[in-house]
Image 1 (cartoon, rainbow, N blue to C red):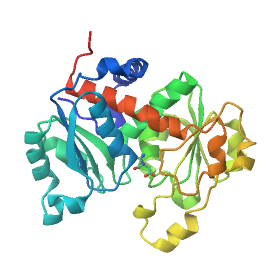
Image 2 (cartoon, rainbow, N blue to C red; image 1 turned 45 degrees about the vertical axis):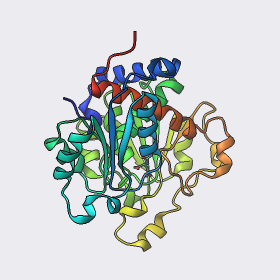
Image 3 (cartoon, rainbow, N blue to C red; image 1 turned 60 degrees about the horizontal axis):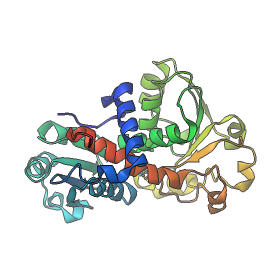
Image 4 (cartoon, rainbow, N blue to C red; image 1 turned 90 degrees about the horizontal axis):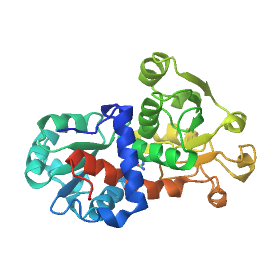
Length: 307
Ligand code: NCD
């Protein structure tokens, strides 16, 4: 049995297999409408979510399966003090696969150790968010056709932004990628990402503060929100929240084929006027997320493709 807790749980070849299957599903979704009939996905969300939870639920429904779960810790037995380990043992009796989001880093890993069903990490604290990475990779592959040779700007809260950590870990396995890490000094990537992931793998990267200076060289700009819920005090958040605002003027500095991605939700970091720019691809990313999650569910459940 395989879990998906970190993007590195899948080799590049295995990731390719998921993305190839997502392509097949996108080309003919009806063909896959019954492959998970009789199967259940449990969504165990101890932290708020709109896109991720609904996209998982839509994915399972599109495959003909059913969903059950909870959308906040308050509405689950966690409020009574139940441990993640006990919850997953119980859920293993009800469902065939589960997606867990938790404010504590490592909670899905702890769950996976006691689980008899595949556990998907749907975001653990400021740590990792591998299924957003699957979505990001799928979006990049669909829109750019490849990963290699890209200069990718990651901008905003690189310290607490778990989607950034997972995306960097996944992308360093491809050839000739350059990262431009754009953030205020206080929101730079955690040292484990800088030292153990980027430096140890001789990855090309630079850490800069100016979005304007970085923009002209980027093929992909991945914007992120400043993660208010992970700050120790509100004043620091207020000081940092509007560090970057991508607007029409700044978009003039970018290449004509650069794509703008964002895991969403957006707060102020992308002005709504940018939405009409054909390079703004963050809503396409949402659409692609369902195909990527459908493919992941099928592969983790070992469900065969329809003939
Ligand atoms: C992201 C997350 O939860 O980390 N959202 C998402 O899953 N699409 C990004 C964020 O909350 O800023």
